[in-house]
Each structure stands twice: as C-alpha cells, then as structure tokens.
Image (cartoon, rainbow, N blue to C red; front, top):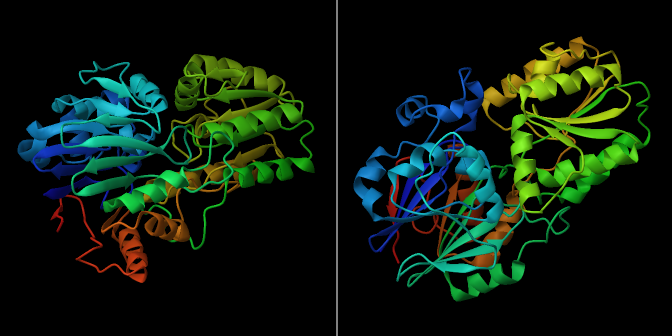
Amino acid sequence: MIEVWAVGGYSEIGRNMTGINIDGEVVILDMGLHMDKIVAYSGDDVHLLPYDKMLEMDMIADDREFRKEWGQKVKAIICGHAHLDHVGAIPVMAKNYNAPIIVTPFTAEVIKGLFEKRRLRNKLIPMNAGQTRKISDNIELEFVHITHSTLQTVVVVLKTKYGNIVYANDYKLDNHPVIGKKPNYKRLKELGKEGVVLFICDTTRIELEGHTYSEQVVKAMLEDLFEFQDTEGKAVFVTTFASHIARISTLVSIAKKLGRTPVILGRSMASYVGAAERLGLYRPKCEVLGYKKQIAKKLREINRNREKYFVILTGNQGEPDAVLSRVANDKFDFRFNPGDIVIFSTSTIPTATCQANRETLESKLKEKKVRVFKDVHVSGHASREDLRDMLEMLKPKHFIPTHGGIEKITKAAELAVEEGYIIGRTVHILQNGSRLILNV
C-alpha cells in the first residue's frame, strides 16, 4: 500500500512537505517555509520563532494531524535541494520526528547554518548524487543528479516493491550549466524502464510555454548588457537569488572583466557562498560580508569610490530588510546618484507580497533616477515542455503535481491529460491536507 499525505506546498508556492506511507513506513519529503509569510514578517530573527507562532502565522505546514497519525512511523526526512521553501522549517519542525535528515552535502551545510541558534536533535546524513542508501528493509533511497538554481540539486527516488517513487521538487533541464554537469538523463530513462509507480514534481513555471533556457543564456545576457554600457563614474549594483551560486560566479567574473572589484553583501548570500566555499564547490576570491556593521563600513567605502566596485547584494524580491532595499531607503551611508545602475538578475516570485515589495523598491530607485535593468534572468524551474519531457522519460503510472496553487497544479494535470493520463485515476490534484491511496 502506498498512501500520499499532502501536508504543505499543494495550495501555495512554499512550505513544501509531503508524507509517503509505504506499508506502514513513512518518509517525509521536504520541510520548508512559506517564503511569502517570512518576507512579510517584520519582527526579530524569524528563525528563532517557536513552532506554535510559526504555525499561527502560516509560515510552516500544519503537520499536527500528520504527526499524530504518522509521526511515530517516520523513517527519514529527505530534501532534494537547499532552498528555504524546502528545508527552512527543519530547525523548528524536524525535532518532532525521531528520524535522520538525508540531503546532499551542500544542502547539509546550509541546514547547519540554519541550526546555529537552535539545537539539532536529528542526525544529519550527507549523500551524493548517484549514491543509494537503505531507509528500511523495504525502502531504498537513491539521489539522481538534476539541475536547478542552486548547487547539488537531486531527484529523490524511493525504491519499493511497488516500483520507483520519484520526487522532483524543484528542477530544470539545463544542458549547459555554468557549474556542474547536465542532468543525468541516462539514469532518469533507466528509472522509467524499471517502472515508476508515482512521480511528484513542481509546477512553479508550468504556465511558461516551451523549454526553460540554460544558465549560459543569462551569462550571455549579462555580458551583452555591459559590453556597450557606459559605467564610468557610476555605481553598479546587481541583485540575484542568494542561493544561486552559478549566477554569483558569473557576476564575479564579469566584474573582473570590467576592471572592478566584486564585493558580495548580505547575510543570506554569505550563508550560501560560505557553504559552497567550505565544500570546495566555489570560491569567489572576493569579500563576502554578511554582518550589518561590515556591510555599513563597506558601503561607506563604496560611496567614496563607486567607480571601483561591482556590488552583488541581496534584495532581489524587494525584501524590506535586504541590503538593496535598505540602501534605497537611505539606511546606510551610501547614496545613489542619477545614472547609477541597478540590475535585477532575477524574476519576481509569483506571490502577492514579493510582487508588491519589488514594485515598491523599483519605485524608490526610479525616484532617485537610477537606471534599472529587470529580468536579466532565466528560471531555475521547468517550463511546460520540460515537464512533458520528464513524463515521457519516467513514464509514471501515477502523477501528482505540487508546489503551486490550484491554477498551476490544474495546468500541470491538463498537460498530463494530453499525455494520456486520466484525472482522478492516474493524475491526481491534491491540496494541503489531502490524502491519496494509490491503486497499485
């Protein structure tokens, strides 16, 4: 018997958490934060809030019923990559389960950073792509390399007597990544031939027709932008996702080509870059500053020598406490001049809070007559045709779309219908709290 419990991430983008019950043994896939709620929070350190408060504010998935019924059966907590909407709730939720956390080494380093101010009770087990591990006598775990907008992202495979359960939440099919290898198509196709009983994957960018372009495309876009851009005497600030190490590496390289000194500012950037450095995955060879006093001191220096630096900083979603927003609101001893350049090497996360914050930040910058360049970016998520490719490679018996509201999940289900699936029988639309027993 296979039963799926959609705990979180099926009615919104974020707070991802899925329970899989295989003959009475349970595996938790992801344990994330609702980033829209986190961004909107204006109090002290959000990561120190207690479980009950985070639950009350919808920052985490409501796992109370799940824990009451299945909590004692949980054998492992498994996360496929290091984004906070997939691992950010581990510090406050994982302690309620007597189970190890199994992740890639980079994700493990990020999680350790989240636990700095909390005591980690669960055993943290790093596992590389291509490796397997016994979860129990009846369940074996395999990690398969895939690409995304952060390092060491994997497809999670649970090998059972019923067939393979494949969880790809999130991924893209990048054949020319800036860091690392292209997806392991050979293994994905082999899984399909072995037999996939269930495939669960994200729908974040399902509305985008066609294929998600390679990260190499953004590299070319950024190089093209600066080729004829007059930057003499101007400040250059670029913001992107803190976890996007490949993008940061491109920006550092471009800064050096321009003859400017790259500097990376922001706590979350320092956290992710630090994790990559400790594992030897990427070393930017420039200053990376995460503490407010360090950032304030550096911005004073940049204000005096704006032509010398190329600033890579947090604030791509317009988060009020991020460095770029604080600069725009004159919270540091740095002032934008007319003609200074700000580049958003990112898209806006499709949630109301992020969209409103970005609009507010852009308005502030335009008031200061800053030149704003937006959407110098390609997504880290699969588009419509990428999902079709995954369905054709894996040939799953059952398909469950996740990581999006009902509209996104429905669009993914409609695509599956084009591929021969039947709604309610082989493609299943779930919402938070839904449970599904598979006919296997």
